[in-house]
Image 1: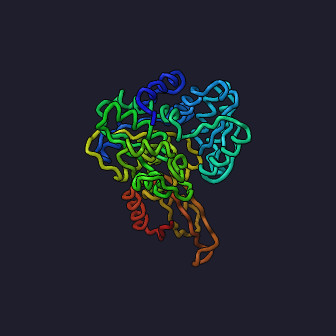
Image 2: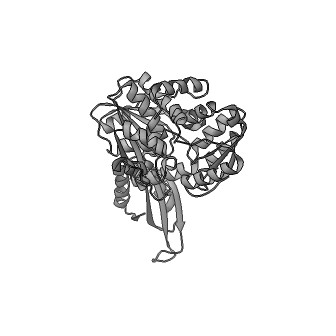
Image 3: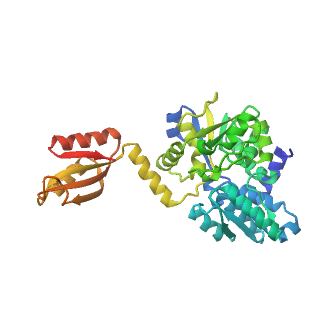
Length: 403
């Protein structure tokens, strides 16, 4: 085990002209909801949209001239891919990245844009890794591991230094964990500077390989499953990273897919931050009360923001419905001129926003003089929704809530 603060500081020097020093800011909204003083470390504002450029650039900077000449290859669910592509191009090195068939197209397109050749293979990261090793053997390219490499960990550990420099009074850092490279680097840096600090990892409950390994004290391999937090969906932590996890990490908790989606939604609505699933894992753990900390000052590491806009749209729609802020109902109307317009006026006058209206003139059991009209409306709160429904019924409208 050779990862230490000195090595992380050398990485900080290596990447200082490339990686951004990302903002750390206090969130009064999340503080009120959780009871902690919540600070957000925004690696979603990093170049390439995620923290991975730190480790990838530091690793490539450390390669010998012979290794650089042979080019580099990596496997990645998306963010490491972009970091490797960016760093390799900066050094004038050929790069190839194997990504899952299911990788968000935003990440695939960006990786190609940074100069890498992309091979898409498999459903989850671990299948990509096997394919990348196969290609590496055929080409002789230098493999850049996304997490199980001390130079990569050192690059990621620069985040820990930045947090302690900006907030010396921090009591705990909540870190997304998959293979373990990020949390290893952050933990070594932070605990060396401030031994009392708590480092807590967060992983999706449907593929909590690092948590199972942490609890059993040995590496546990689980079946590959794709989580909304694709960046931390790995079958097993790295063996090298796991040694640092055992020695430096205080706890690992899990979050559900619903927790992750809610975290993404809340970061957008309340903090105006776009985060991918892995990037929202830390705040998801805090919002779902999965973390218990003695101290008050807590940093949630928002590790990345590379999420498909189509997924964002689905999450917003879903959360609005779950929260009762978007509702659907069917109203029976007489098929007369002005009836539909009057209903729309009534809805809007109560402060609701009409999202969708669909009128079906042919299928009311009372005959052709009546129509069923499907409404989808947005409201401010669940209570507001109930008030709209109650008022419409008081006005004589026959309506039924639908899913």
